[in-house]
Length: 168
Image 1: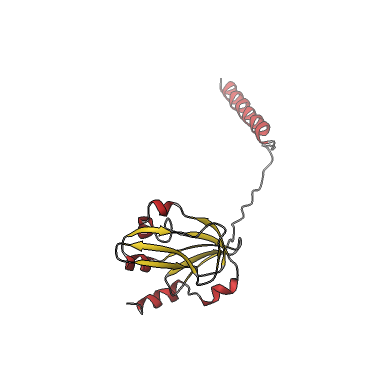
Image 2: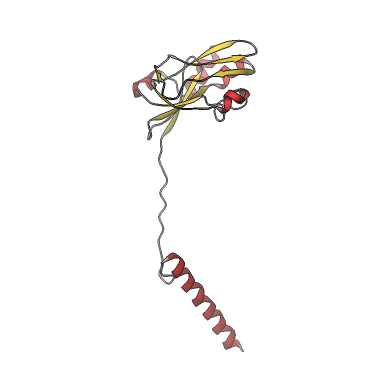
């Protein structure tokens, strides 16, 4: 009896190995080594003195732009958004859109030069997303990085936090 049980287990193991070989084209008796590579895509967030942020993907030379938490907080509830057109050329520190709130209207400036590649149409229909999630769902547009030198005059997060303390 014991021999029959061992035979069944061995046969089952052989069938599983055979199926594994058929499905994966790998020899199940041979050990395999798998290597994992962790991507090193560089991303860095910069801030302007006009309270816009730009998140740069250095590998793809693209950037995502929006307004900071400080800016949306000072504006109050945002009720209207005007975005740039896809394909529009932007100048560093040039106008790129408009935000209107229950308190005021404010121009949005592009922290960098480049060409608009995408706009967040979701915030046109739901402008409050900028208030609720300015750094994630409330982004405004994406663009190419026209001149990397535009980033030199912008602040990192720590520098921006210090700058905001002087604004009130």
